[in-house]
Structure formats: structure tokens, C-alpha cells
Length: 567
Image 1 (cartoon, rainbow, N blue to C red):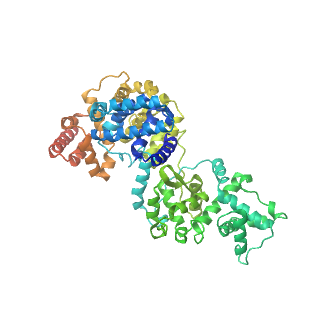
Image 2: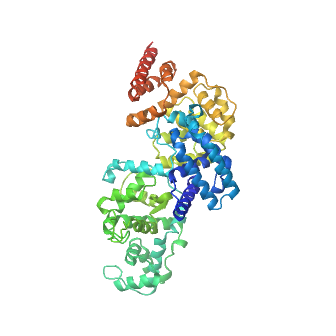
């Protein structure tokens, strides 16, 4: 996936922009980098070349990006900013940067026309421009989105959460291997500090209070000598997870327990499960996050992140926590950044690209263990990397969140050659409903020209032939021309993919269809298409189209299609 190097590039670009007083359009540059990575095999900033911009702006963008022609100006401005950054950061030479700028100047008058030229549209754009980016959200939430889009989706979904965690089913989550979890646990600063403090207390013969808590004088000395934050929290955790009890039972307390670096995997993960329970369930009086009210909401926060399964914006966290959310202090800081740092120290939360927040793999695993201890059904999502194409499609259609779906698809594709991936997906799509077929061809559309033999094999399949022709044509490969009947069939097929999402938000569908939907003369002829969903598609167009004349054409075509099926 492109996400890791793109996130690093965007972070570097932000820093460069602030240092040079440049207003960077981060979203546009991120899109340039995403598409360069996905379709042009750009794996780092230094891979950008003059021809990269030409391919991006005159081929990939017209084929993929749903945008009006006038948006070309913003995209070109972002591309020029990217070139300035590439040169300034020595990713390209000065001579290369000059050639890139000359190419952008030449592209400038051509790009608006390219964006408006419907003959250049690829499968995703020519059809999904009329569908909208949420077409697969229900029942197949696979939109192949960026982190930013996933964060926005997560924000919108928070309103649906019940205040009581036990009232709604938990989503299936993807877990990493126990070996990787244990390796991550060995790097959690909190766990290491728990053992350091326990060793320091017991080896020095220091005695806690009658109630088992850390004495004030010992806490002060530990803070000074060990440089650990919140010694009282660390001691409470050591007692709760049994570290102190094990040590006391030994004749040599200081060496009676192994630190995380030397504990075996199962023992360490048991310790981590107890740690998560202690942090999010017990009364910690602000010693975890720095705010008592926020500590009391830690379970709610982790539960929200567990359910969303996508990076969320910090403000979303603050809004979700309500009154417990950090307020501005005397210096104007919200304090949320400090709370996030503390949660990262504890191994629960991590920041990803653009300052977005999500549970760590350890946090996900620990919360799942806690749910199971509470008697809740906490399903584990299957690993789809080695699944067959049928299983991949069925699993994605079952409701996998977009962030996991993107990860699953990327890993599934990475385990196969482009040719074998296309062959398996297209074979699995045969005879499937439009939603499943649309999902399969959308994934195939991400594959490079190496998949050509497998795609070409399906030119004889009536359902897949139009998609195969479009795939070949969009890559400049030899292909038969689409007949009018085939173009109509593919339009109906992909519009059928929009129907579930359109039912949820007809206004958004209407806006998209008005901007780049099929022309009236094509709608008028759709009734002739031998497609199982043609009546429903035309009914949808008749309800959604804002142009009364074209809407009437769609309703008439729907009547003809219905009469034809009856006859």
C-alpha cells in the first residue's frame, strides 16, 4: 500500500511549507501521491519523473478523479508546489524540476478538456461519478479510501453509537499474530517502567502503605531516581497484575520476575491483558491521561476507537468525550495532545498520518480480551490474504470497515501476480449480482498491464466483456470497440451497484448523477438492456434526476422495461 510513504511525504511537505511560508494544498498533493503510487509504481518521492505528471494529469486524473474541469487549476497549483518541494528537498535535480515545470505549463490548457472528455473516463469514474464515493458502503463498505476519507467516515459514524457499549454488537476485528503482539508489548514504555519500579521497591526493601499503595516519599524518590512518570500508577499496576506478588514469593525479590524483554510471549500477553483492564476499568484518578474526568472515560474512548476501526481526528475524540474532553488551559492548549502522549506511553493509542488517532494492535487485542472477560461476543475477522477470490468478495460484502477492507485487498493482491489476481477475481465475479461483480472489477481496475492475458480471456463472457474492453482501452491496449448495447449494459450494471447507497442518501446520488450521469438519449435506450436490475435502475434515475425532462425520460424507460419483462 502507498499509505506509509505518502504519510511521511505529507508530513515532510507540511514542515517544508511552514518553514518556507508556502500554503500547501495537502489534500491535492496527497491525491497526486496516492495515484502515483497506486498506478505508476512510485514508491518514494525520488521516483517522481517528468512523465509521472503527464500520466497523472492527462491519463489517471481524467480516468479516475470525479472533478469538474475548472478544478484543474487547483490540481496544477498543487503539482507545482510538489515540484518546488521535490527540488528544495533534493528529491530531484534542478534540471529535472525545470522539465517538470515545463510539462505542467504544457498540460495546463489541456487538462480541463481531459477532465470533461467522457471518452477518457475509466470504470471507476465513468460509472462511480454517477454513484458517489460511498457506493459500496452498504452492503459492501469497500471504497478504497485514503486515511483522511476513512477519518471523515469514522466521524460521521460516531452519531450512531449507543452510549451503552453492550447494546450494540461488536464488529469483527483483525488481529496481528501473538508473536507480533508480544514483540510490540516488549516495546511499551509503561510495562518496562512497571518492572523497573517494582524491582527498585523490592530490591531496596521499601515497604508500601498498609493499604498496599506507594508511600509519598517513595513516589518522590522513584520519580527522581528512575525518571518514571506517575510512580503511584505504576505501583498500582504492578500489584494488580501480580508482578509484586511473584517477587515477594521469591527468596531473591529483585530477580524474581523478568522484565518484558525477557518474558515469554504467553506470560507477557497475560500481563498486557491485565494492564489494559487496569487502565480502562479501574479508578486511576487522572494518573493515566492527566485528567480525572478523561480517565473515567477511557473505556468509552477505547470502545469508540475499537468500533470505528479507522483513524479519527483528535477533535472527534474531544467531541465524543463531551464534558470529559480536555478544555483549553491558561496557555491556550487543549491538553488533548498531552493525553494522547500518555496513552501512547501506555501502549493503547498511536498517532498516524496527519495527527489522526487509532488503537494500537496491542490496544485492539487488549480490548477484545476485556470484552470477552465481560461476556461479550467479540468476533475476530478472518485473515483474507490467503483466501480465494470468492471468499474475499463474500467477506468484503459482509460489511468489513473501509480501512480493513483496503488492508485486506492490498495484502490479497500482494500475494499474487497481477495476472493470477485478475483471473481469480473475474472468475469469481461470473454470475454474481452487480454489487459483487462491481467490487471484483473495481479491484481488477487497480492492476497493471501485466494482468492483460487474464482480462482478455473474459472478452467472451457477456457480463464481463464490457468491463474487460474498458479495462484494456483505458490502458492503451488493443481491444474491440464497445458496442452501444455493451455500453448500455455496463452503465446499468454499475448503476445497479449504486442502488443501496442511493437509498440511504438520494440527494447525494442526485447531485452526482446531475454532474456526470448518462445523457438523456442513453437513458432513453436503457430499457432495451437485458439486465436483471434494469427496472430498478431506471426507477432510481426517475426519482433522483433533478432535470424534470430527463427524469421523465427515465420513468418512461422504466415503464417500457417493466412491460418488456412482463411480456
